[in-house]
Length: 135
Image 1: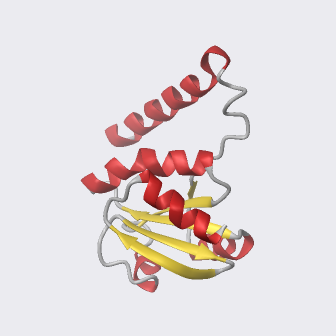
Image 2: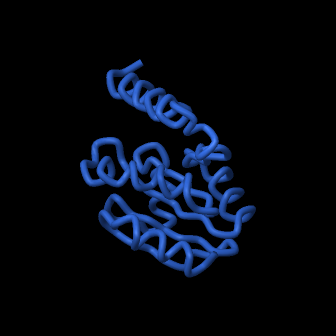
Image 3: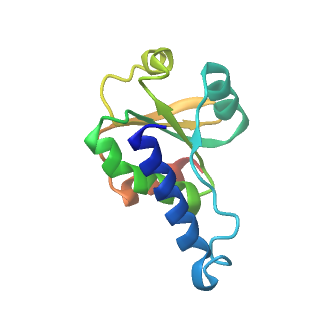
């Protein structure tokens, strides 16, 4: 396990502990987390099965992507949209297929069709507004 994986594992544990700490478990009941896409078929199933899907095309080495990560996690927990994450280094074909030229790139799908694409770090309110437009 790399240092980066270990840091992520610890961070995830801390977030889960905070979510269930001091009675907050009730407030976070049903909490949803981003879905890490495992390949083309998995991506296609997610987009086809769910009404509104926000896809975060990211890279581990990307500083702006790391800044966006907490926002993406919050949106997954707070909205009805499915939030998916695609590592462009692991899934280069998906990134090419969706014309991702820079990271972070956020794509929004509604009823299986890509309806929005945003490049760069976006504020939570802006992303929430785009999701609600299609929900």
